[in-house]
Length: 251
Image (cartoon, rainbow, N blue to C red; front, side, top):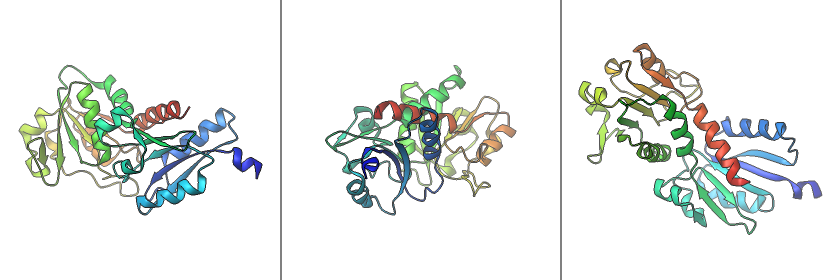
């Protein structure tokens, strides 16, 4: 009983997360640092309201949580406080639980993305297309803004003038936006043949194609870019950087 009470618990909130980067990453980290009283678990929620039960059950041992698809925006009303950057982004992927049991939300996705993209950028990379409009895409937009890169979202239906629909993506648009980021789940294992429906024939050696997906390491989206000479990068380094940032916040 005593041991259970002294356990330091961390976890991931998401849906259908039997496989998660975070759990493997932190389990390895705790092992390396000899933190035998630390544990990282997946909280697989069918609906976000189930979070109340998780908090009740683990209230004495829970220290921090990560948040993944599809709850990065839905989580916000459950928090007592939201960090300034996360508020601006409008999405939370990291939660710190204070000694008084209060929940404070942060966003470390933007930090991970910004610092993993930066080394690839050249003078010509002034405009970007963000494929998808979910919680992850908001952090990407915030990071691009900080990097002084103009961006437009691409979704099935363009809702306003800062958006394109997939049908709008012609030669001119693609050649004008030399950074293209996939924020959709298309192509994630096991559905590795899927990819966003963009005209890959207009992608060339000046493009950077960045995929938030890291499993498989080279998605169909990235493969198609590589075949046309583009620089490609998957989301693994972004995940590692955001995890380290989360670890700092919790400690």
